[in-house]
Image 1: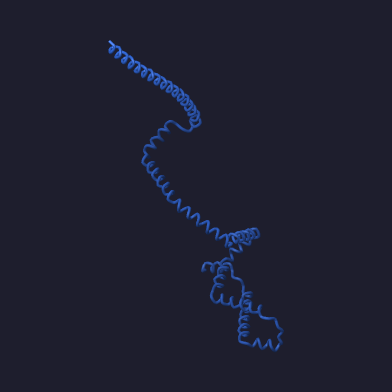
Image 2: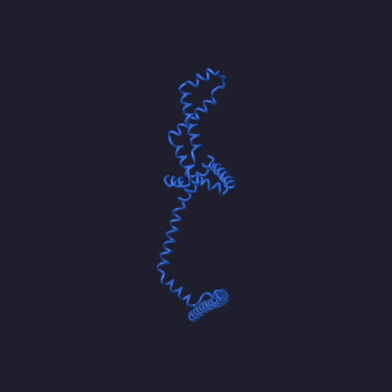
Length: 240
């Protein structure tokens, strides 16, 4: 009899545990249901707001967009799905390329900064600033007639530059500069007429006087000769 009572009590305890588990599961299910209902209400409110906003936004473009346009756009996207995929692949490749070029770009940037600093210390930027100032002054003072004359005389300036850069001309200019420097550096002293004639009779002085005479003759010939006509200048410019 005692054994039967013990078994009955054990069964009752097991049944109570099962009931407790069922009650707990029912409570959990109730909480879950309430949470889902709250979520549903929130989503419903959000959906209504989105729908209302979409309607308001679409009303602004309703005059410009038709349902057929949306269908056409959707078909267009479907037909170009492969092209879009390739485009995305290219964008990814470009992104990888940019990542690879970042270290190189940093090196180039650092090198450029060093070079610019070197140019600044050497005075190139100061020279450019003064050159810009001179260019501004030239633009402010030159008029249209001056620019027209400059344009017409450009071929002559080019020919003059070519002649100046010839070895013989450069040597003559260098000789002239050296002679002027020697004359400036020589001590000033009084010379008698006899000493002056004696110095003029030296080979160096005679060669210098011949060169000076040729220069004066060439200068006089250039001043006395008539200027070239416009047609001859045009023909000479074409030849150059």
